[in-house]
Length: 86
Image 1 (cartoon, rainbow, N blue to C red):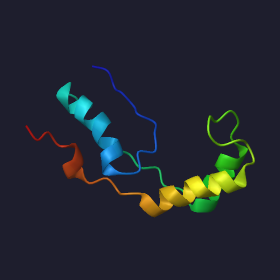
Image 2: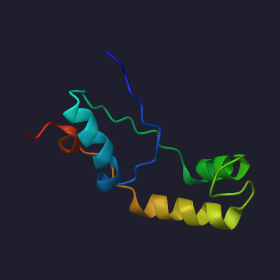
Image 3: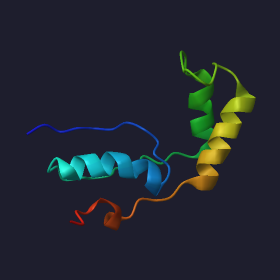
């Protein structure tokens, strides 16, 4: 059996749902792992990342807007999100 990892922020239940639904329909068990870092560490990493399609390296204004949105809107996953309901 394959293990599938989705490496994406998926900050809210709606974003996670599309991946969870597909996995459950295919018979997979879903486990969510949250890697939580402080804001300043995230900012440092975003500012030094190269080749990102929407945030240029060193673009602090855009990086802070994105991080502020994420930190303000993040919804911690709840196990009820990823249990088979049918």
